[in-house]
Length: 77
Image (cartoon, rainbow, N blue to C red):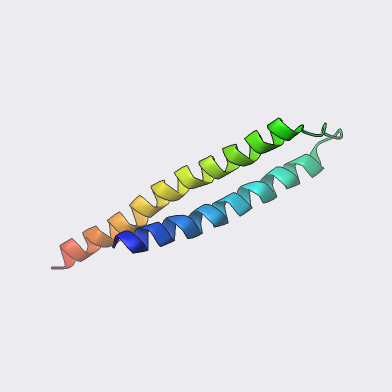
């Protein structure tokens, strides 16, 4: 069960991070003015923030999914 949850969290983290990056790029293209380029530190901080946000959302979703499956199994007995 632990391996399953780690695998689900890893997959969800990558998928959510990809979605967040896509959303950031899309919002930047829709902006009326050209955005300023980020410096090296600001770029690293933005990427780290995206990955931490994705990991936090993945943990919440994993808890909900696997916890829900567990309770369905308990109620089915």
